[in-house]
Length: 452
Picture 1 (cartoon, rainbow, N blue to C red):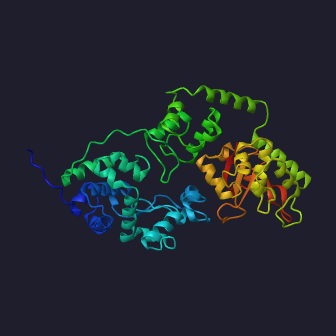
Picture 2: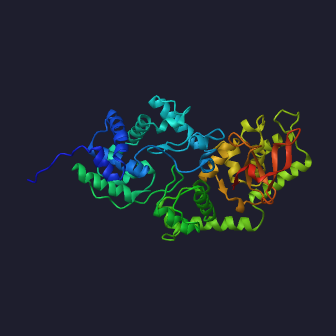
Picture 3: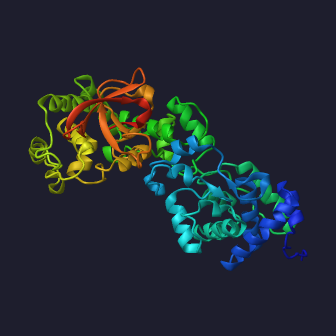
């Protein structure tokens, strides 16, 4: 029988040569990571290979916890207002940007890992860069996602997907796995070719050649990152091509990709629905255009709170009852900017407004929720570029610098121009709160959103 050898422990010097990192840095950080993995029962050579290769990809040859690449403006653009990350205050995007070996991101993650591990991460996010904290977060992440099971099966593609959400950095990861396997004497199963996956908005962003393929089919710049622009374009493509209302979202399953790239033909029901939608658009104004026209009429009629400060507009209360709005919304009694914007769309046959005001499927009365759902392409909402914004689109903006996290919503009266944005808003005005026409600097706009 062939002679077998037991797997050996790697020294910091061996790890340093394998990943191209300074030996002193590896000697500082690897023992802490190894200790935290062992505390969670993760001791096998395969797990250690997975951990070293992951660190070698996520932080490169530094082999130490790092800040996510980017500046304050980038973090604000990417993460502020992201309810899915728990970023509920203005500035959370920058304050809770990625840190550590695997880029802990978002207020909720800092809070949850802090409570679980006993570190005040929410109060002091830079603690995530300390060796013992970064190591504990990393090891706990490995434990939560059951990465050991995949590593011990030699399923390295799944290991990478569990960490990254995709196969970003796959070539280096695969190289490191082979190199480390040779050094330890552990068996490394040949990596299987990447499997088809569902593309969706994640943090960090999914990336890879499959994203590039989808972007090219959509006519977008093919940067390979599945970000909000790509997600929004996917939702628009699904709407245009007759997907059922419940399936119009920002995710691309392998079957969706086959339709998008013309490798498969859309079902007849989709084609029929697409023709019907096209005919509806051709014979009249869009839902957003009808909605803004109705709100302009309300503004001319002087619809306002009566009595002032009551959060009740008698005319809107009557409309809400007539249009079948959920009972808990009919009497108003809340800040009503979003309520009026979507109530107008409901009268125009808006599907997003129906899902919100009649079915209660999402909290569209809360501006950060509108932004989060639009970023994800859900409920017929999608973010659009300023250059695409047109009359009737929803505008999310701050009253002034430092909104927390998104202050207000209205509808565009005309595309932004000359550094100004003209809207018609509910729950607005200089004195009494009413439906009024407003003009503000474009710098206060947080996002332009299209509803259906």
